[in-house]
Image (cartoon, rainbow, N blue to C red; front, side, top):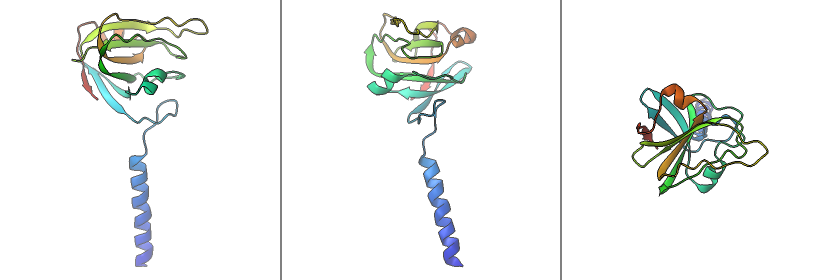
Length: 154
């Protein structure tokens, strides 16, 4: 009887460990390996982190839905001018460029998918360290403007 109980406990422990290390999944079924939180005053977003060149190139491509409290935070190794585009992006986005202190330096509002034609680059023309992508229109709903600051947990 003891062996059966110990075997059952071992199975439960193994399952608990398995599910504890299993990554959460995004809206499109991709595993979320890096998650964080970004807040502007009263509005907070759970964000996927895009830190590698591969993650940054793919971004939010092919997503058909993004929850209102979700987004993607692009984290760059150094300050620089980082143009973005909407190639293969299916939902309108607000793109918020921030400097290394988390201060908003540029906002591209309600950027629409570019469809089958050319995808123009959105270039802030300013050095940034972070770019946050959220659903289109949210920056206006929040009253977000250049000069506002954020708190980030990356």
